[in-house]
Length: 118
Image (cartoon, rainbow, N blue to C red; front, top):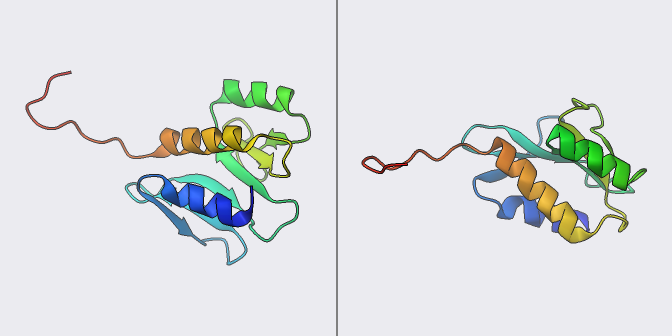
């Protein structure tokens, strides 16, 4: 996955935006409805990495399956964040699934329409 592919995929998710609160070298992807972060990446770094929000149990399983490629979140809460090295060892489809899951964990909840029942 290239830096351009990463940006394009993150921005394709509903209510997502790219911001630079930590300076121009770090892309931070947030949801516009609540401003919560779902992905961070220093796009000019080599190797390219992305940090994502992740369920703690899934995080543990991924780190065991991909040692050296998926690690606890760099400078983030190690229980709830992972950092993935995007050098081709982790399949692009899995990376996209994890980005989508991270987005789903933080995206604003859509209120039900009035008059509908659960």
